[in-house]
Image 1 (tube, rainbow over the protein chains, first blue to last red):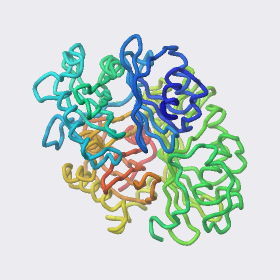
Image 2 (cartoon, rainbow over the protein chains, first blue to last red):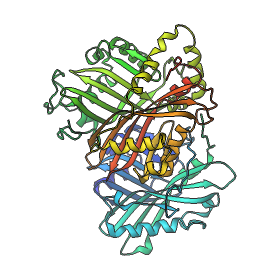
Image 3 (cartoon, rainbow over the protein chains, first blue to last red):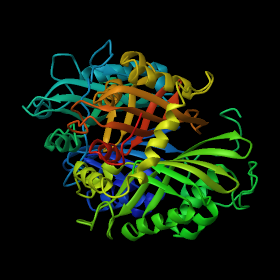
Length: 235
Length: 360
């Protein structure tokens, strides 16, 4: 495994020494958590005490994604880095990392604003580490996620049963040889009778020599935390 | 001076704390600055670290002018001694307060006169009594966004605009921001009202700026045009053309969203409660980033009469002045990230009649 892969693996295993690659201003989001700073991030994972079976790392000059399997289900970590120094982490897991979410103010907005293809937002030019020939593959993965008017195929039905009008935004996408990874922010209206728009992440990996083995990890922990919130568009 | 001059001055982005604090030979012309500072970014990061993390509070006396005005919607503070008192107050309530540098976006307005826009995450634990937040109710260690715009000359900050996300801080400490704003406003309405004159003076100052805009070749030009198009013209699709389809929005009080729709939603949420809206761009700066992107800072104001129900609650017809500082990450001429800090407790404080009566 690469140095970045080793770092990510160590961090989510709760290994304090692996945290030396975390920048002091690193932020972690996902699985219901928003955590800031090296020490806070490491303490969050140390408290989990979970072991993971590591599957794959895909990395590029500025990004990395680690895919793993835990007893509760698949997990993924997507990272921004500067020469191996980790600046941002997105963690996707089958369960929430925290017992309670942070209070926040919500914004009434139109998730499909201005998109000719209402379900997806992806600008390949925003992702300099993504090979142009991989962009179509990423788009195809998003299509599996979101088809207007139909339940997304790749997200478990127990999640989509409570959502409507799912939208996908590709926040990060990058290539390593014949493989690519992407971080996709999923937005949807709550379909369970409560107000609001929810937002949670998914991570995809595609091997273009075996595209049928493309894989997606959904941040179910983040989804669950979002669904426990009460929509608050005012102070 | 062109916005990307002095490329030898490294940005904060992507650097470890050890690297940021390493002492280097001077690599930028800094007349009158202490010899330890290698460049303007180093000055900002190092003196902030020394004052707060190392609690060398007395350094403020050599790093702020005796008459330096510090503007924020929490009030105006003048001079180094007042800053020393304020810093000690803060440390007695939040003793482990550590302003972690995220970005310094700076400009040299004239030789030796710098304006820096310093974005930090103020990481702290509420352990002692605080004038705003009272006695701590629970042990919360968390980070709150702050941006400080400082005018710096010969080692001293001579003017500052400070925006702290008090809305998020209050929420994290278990205090309801509207209740806090009401309490502060009630205190404002007692005693000598002339002490609030600074807000009116600031309103008068920015009203003279007119349709202030950056030069066309400045990275901030398109952003300021977009914000004006949104706030003054209500042309949101036109404005959103400056944003990537997957723009990341980090706005006050925990608003973290993705997409043009979300960005437009934030702008509308701010604009809707106001009538007679005026948008004023006060200052801008831009610097190259290590990844080839461009970091842009814009300090802007929104003024208007609070007449409609919205995010700040029911209106009472007060004139509001909203101070915002935004940091943008731009790639290929479009915004990838918008990090905006506004003190919405300060906005609601005005809505409740606090901070004096603003004439506009």
